[in-house]
Amino acid sequence: MDISIWVRLVLAASFAAPLLAQDTGTVPAATIISAPAEAQKRVETHHAPAGYDLVFQDEFSRDGMLDESKWDYATERNAQGWFNREKQYYARGRAKNSRIENGHLIIEVHAEELNKSEFPDWSGQKYTSARVLTRGKAAWTYGFYEIKAKLPCGTGTWPAIWTLPEDPDVVWPNGGEIDIMEHVGFDPGVVHQSIHTRAFNFRAGTQKTTKFDVADACAAMHRYQLLWTPEFVLLGIDDSPKFLYKKDKGNASRWPFDKPQHLLLNIAVGGDWGGQKGIDPKAFPAKFEIDYVRVYQLKNR
Image 1: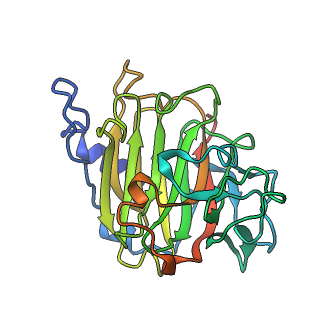
Image 2: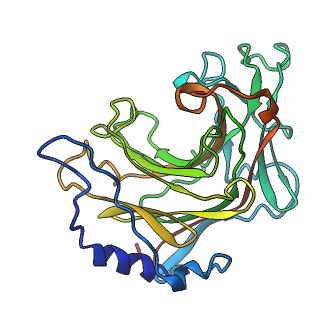
């Protein structure tokens, strides 16, 4: 994929429809951008973006457990419960919940209860899952990200590909969050892409977001993409840019995206959003399959 396709589309838009309604405080609809036909034809072709170097990759080519030189596991809130009233326990290095198999990273949710003596931070959750992340291993400021994945369906599942600030002292949402892909199982085939900041976030109902149909998202692999520059965040799928968020100069509450962020991959269960239609027992086990993760940055940055 030639990243110039994305850049040409951004320039063509000329930011004519501002994404930030600064004077009124209202939240306008997301800007949707359609890719030209030549971009859509290259779904399976992958090339380094023009002018960008590969700085991180995991092709998940060797069966077994994750490479811990690249990945860590988030488990810190198992005892008190995870945010958004989610129902899962996130396991560390447990093959049942996260493993490399047949060239894919598998994150798998099971409906089960654990043994407190074996899992002392278990606090009665009825579902096990995994949340893997590059925190402490790799983080980036700006770049082109591509994650090829097949999503789980089933009411109550909530898979995500997203970024958070590397600095542990930054309180959410002050440091910003970029949601490259979110999907809730009660609305199968509808992919959401969003950003959150202190000014714009879901708790205030002001997040900047869009959604679009990917009919076979739970049956086929798709490439979920982020182009993050000092001037904008552009999110897309399969080389088709979908959502553009422009920098608001001098306003950190609206643009905190100038510091390193790490990448996260996980499946939550239930919660304020994922559980809006309940949790279907027949949804489990549920698999999130990731073919690869690749991150590029501009040469000579």
